[in-house]
Amino acid sequence: MIPRVRLTYVQGLATLHEDLHAPRHVELTTDGTSLVICPPGSGRPLAKLPLELLLGVELQDTPLPNTAPPATSTTLTSKLLREGSVIVLRFDAGAGIPASVAAQPLLFVETKPGGGPASFAAVKNLLTPRTPLDMARLERGQRRRNAYVTLLVLGIAALLAATLIALLVQAIGPRQRQGSSAGAVHALTAPAAESLLRS
Image (cartoon, rainbow, N blue to C red; front, side, top):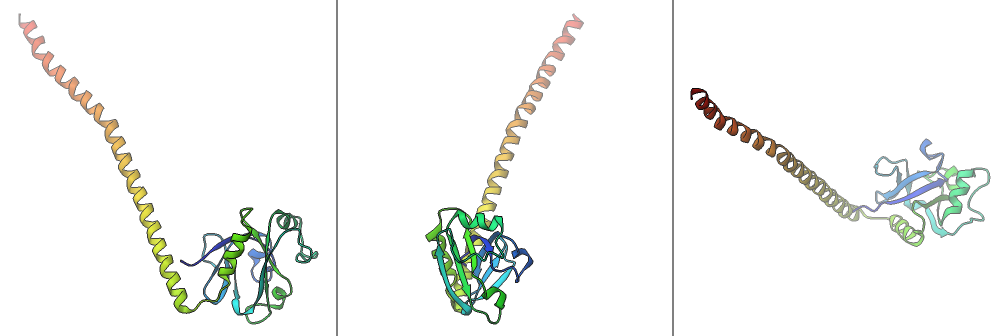
């Protein structure tokens, strides 16, 4: 399946999309030739960065001495950069990477604290260029996973529906039996009442 890594974007991509003007949770994925940044749970790209222009990726522990430009730092940015390890990406300027993006590092922190090396390894895996054949194989895996998830959801829905039906039958059944019993008692006592009146 196509890899996805959820991180908190901090800064560096403000000129590419208005939703990247401030820190936010994002998912990083790939289309084989680009790093794709999108909102969590969405395939809508906020930015696509060609992997051929990638200069490097590194994991830095906070505090960062030289990666957060003071001119763009905010209280929230500073707080995020103090909270955990920071994944720093650097791209060269070129087609798809404007000079404003290449001029500063792109900063991401883990959404969940303590994921440092694992998150870094996952991001490095994303940054590996892939052939169309590799991407086709990953997409097949993604479709299989989606099918399994759909089947699981349908199975849970069917189980819940069966449980609800069983509970309704259990709740309605005794009332019907009680109603039938009352009718039978009434039917038995009616002839007895008639015979008493005749006598």
